[in-house]
Length: 259
Image (tube, rainbow, N blue to C red; front, side, top):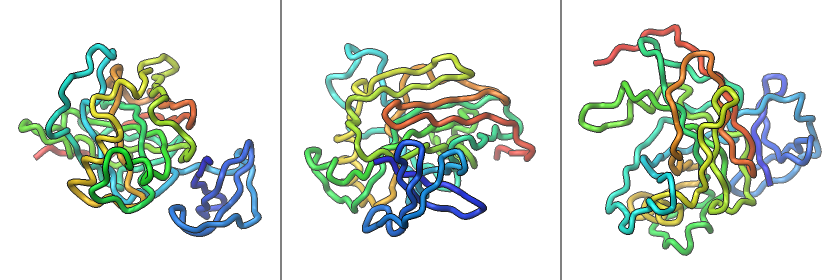
């Protein structure tokens, strides 16, 4: 199923996409829900980020360019980081480049949505705790990375986590390609088989560190090909089985000062 959040006449709804219609639902997305009987045409709504995340966790440097480059030994401690929920935007929203810098970086990714509380979960059982998947763009301002290796500020600006267009619940995450087009030109196109830390191991590791909650979003890493972009550029992050997440970069009107 394809779940979506959308806005009509300044009111936010949740629904299920069926062909060109959206059937509205009520109730908890991760619990009991039911159809309301009301439907909308896709062209009469504004699609939003498909959920308001509980928290967002990303993993860094998680793709190789070819299967032959996959390491025999995985990192003992993978590089994880958090992104604020205030950075989330939806399809067609503008990504704002902080004032004082000219370029930021797009990173197209498969995003995993946790559906059940998960603690100390084995790799074999991980998918039982996954609700579905969406497309994420882990936008980054490398100029704001700390000299000691801290990434938080460079990934935390408002608008730096586009998500969407839907949550797809019927997906094999191990057999999809993560793609990106910049101004119509292909920049990224890699299978999730090229992940260094695979999805099962990634989520299992996290559940042994922290309790994952329904609505947590895990960004699983970005393939080779991500580039720096300017104001006016259009990025389309795509996983064909989910859809295309399209956003335009725009310059900020607010000064941002480094400390």
